[in-house]
Image 1 (cartoon, rainbow, N blue to C red):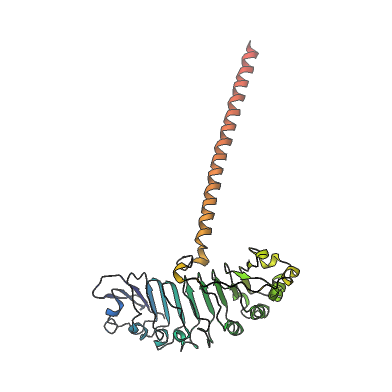
Image 2: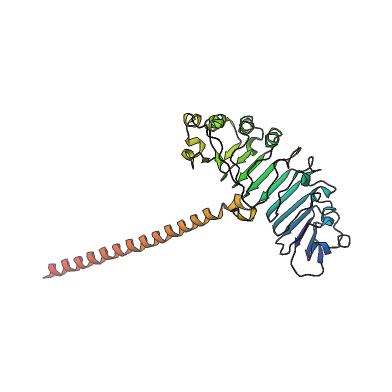
Amino acid sequence: MWKVLLLTLLPALAHANCQIINLANKRGLAKCRGNPTDFDWEQISIQRTQRVEFSNLDIDLLQLPATVAKLNIEDIRISKSKIKAIDPNFFSASSNGMSYIGLNQVELPEPLTRQHFNGLQDSLTQLILHNSVILEPDALEGMKKLVKLSIKDSPMTKYPTNLGQLLQQGIEKVEFVNTRIQTFPWASIVTWLNQDVAGSKGVIDLTDSPLHCDETLKEMHTFIHNKENSKARLEGFKCASPEIFRDRYLNQISSEELAKVTEPVPKMEDIPYDQFESKPNDGKREDTGPAEVKDTVNKGSMSLITLAIFGGVLLFAIILIIAVIMIKRSRSNKYKGHT
């Protein structure tokens, strides 16, 4: 049974203030405010806490407090925070071995490296990195239990070097949404899709990544046109280069067209973290869709509603005018009949 620790950290608080609440189902809930380095973890008796959430940090921390990791934490989620560094040994310090790591809108100036995940090869099952968080290409080497890898709104230009191996091991969900990655290990992806490794749970989502489409996609092209036998899904496969394929989905391109393209993948210049145009969505992209799309839909809906109202009023006015004319004619005919 999971115990939950929720942390809301606010600036200019000299001392930590923690309140422990014992719920009916005996789940421990600790609500804390203050600088996390001030927390007396021994005093508040949360040694069995398994999940920690840091959210809306308004203070800059040089690193996360090491005392947090000494708890038996399996799940850590950090969002909307100005943390400037995460100690390379932080995630692996938990005695249980973390199974879930989620970072969303965390302003880390440096990528996460292989050392950050050292010791988690046999425990980490889900890694969620949204809004400008970057992985070094070899950061996930040796991962054996990963079932979900979600990277969204990131200036990453290279996919993990062991992505092919992760697919062979049966990873269920892979998301590279709005990244700067142009090409992937297509042969491994096609094999994963054809073998239906993850069945109906299998999803690879490449939406809004600038994919380069050329002759190396021959097998992928064949799969897309003959995918009835696979329950796994490949989503968002839209080409960005070369120019003749820009904004075209792969299933809209013929195999003959693909075979003619031998141009090299165009160089994607690295973009500084603070200049990358991410699409903040509080981790709810899969539910609400990109903000700009949602706004467009809302504006379109309002326009349709306005048009419908105007049309209804106009139609009512026309019907009313016709009715008045018919009544006048009827009265006029009656008057003539009497005369």
